[in-house]
Amino acid sequence: QVQLVESGGGSVQAGGSLRLSCATSGYTASTTCMGWFRQTPGKEREKVATIRTGTYYYVYYADSVKGRFTISLSRDNAKNTLYLQMNSLKPEDTAMYYCAAAPWSYCSDALSRTAFTFWGQGTQVTVSS
Image 1 (cartoon, helix red, strand yellow):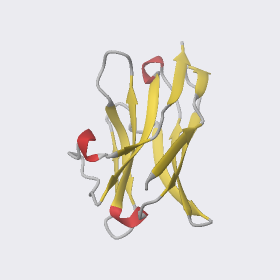
Image 2 (cartoon, rainbow, N blue to C red):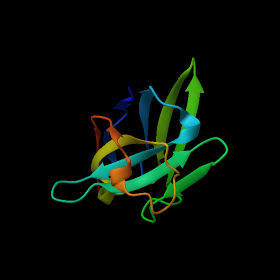
Image 3 (tube, helix red, strand yellow):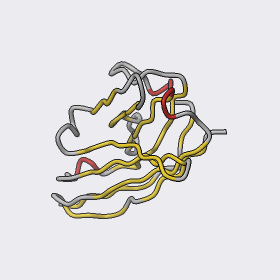
C-alpha cells in the first residue's frame, strides 16, 4: 500500500523560500513517477513538478515554476522522501500542495493527473506580498 505524508508548508513573504517534504512508502521508486501538484479553490489541480529516478530518469516542471522550484527524491533507511524546494516564491504560488504517485508510469510532460492514483493529504502554502 502506497503511503504519502506531506509536511513543510506554511506562510512566507514574497521572495522567500520553503521546502516541502513527502514521506513515502509502499512502492518501487525506479518504476514510479512521483509528483507535486497544487490547487486553489475553484480551480483544477495543477501539475507542478514530477520526477522518476533509475533507468528512465525524467524531471518535469511547469513553466510557471521553472528556475524557482526543484524536485528531488532521496532514500534513507529503505524509505524514500520526495522534496520540493521552492525559492523566489510569489503570491500566485499560494495553494494547497499535494504529493502524488503514479506507479508503473513514465514521467512524460504529457502524463496527466489521472495517472496519479495515490495522493497525500496536502499541505498549505501561503505567500504574502
